[in-house]
Length: 104
Image 1 (cartoon, rainbow, N blue to C red):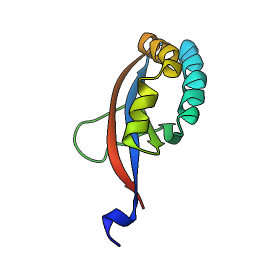
Image 2 (cartoon, rainbow, N blue to C red):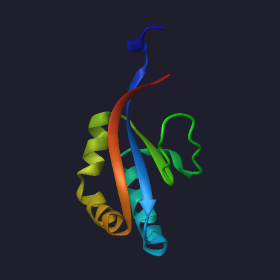
Image 3 (cartoon, helix red, strand yellow):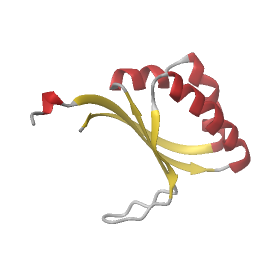
């Protein structure tokens, strides 16, 4: 199969260090609603990590899939995600990237 036969998706990958677990629960609820609204879904949500190579020891990893990279960026910059984003910034340290990928 050629790559152009696959559907291009947008993936958001997040490394999270939760600082306030109680308030972070509110973030998770609000974020989930906004993600679904923009056609996104969780592929990985906070599962335990195990380092295989290098020196990377994240406490929590989240991977989201959106219909496209553009749609993922619309979600991240949306009014609907503004409140959850503010809560996340107050309750956790995060590193977040968006990347194109193919659904195979």
